[in-house]
Image (cartoon, rainbow, N blue to C red):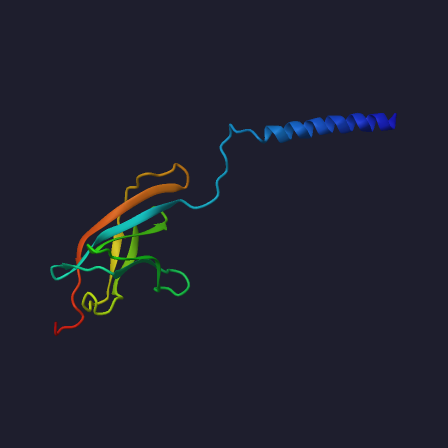
Length: 157
């Protein structure tokens, strides 16, 4: 008798646990997501020196570290300007007002003339984002810097 009672109890308990297991697999309830909201910040423009487009110039986009090594810049994306002097760099960060560092650096020597290295900031104040996925990715925003003029680093020319 005791074995029959334990067997029946075991079957009832198994049924309840199976029912609870299937119930927890419901697709009606929203899924839990872990992560941080993010957005893509795009900076584009054109680099000139005098009246000439500058190709082969390194343009780097970075963030200012506010933790360990406070004040140091960590460059995230860099590109070379194309033959028309155009560049397009991007960074993924928290979707709010942001300030990034942009660096223009002559890496080809005298090929396009010696140009000064310029470090500047790019601000995204109250940005609006497009093409978000509806999840943690909010979308992207673009800032066009227009034409950036660089001076020669050799004052004799």
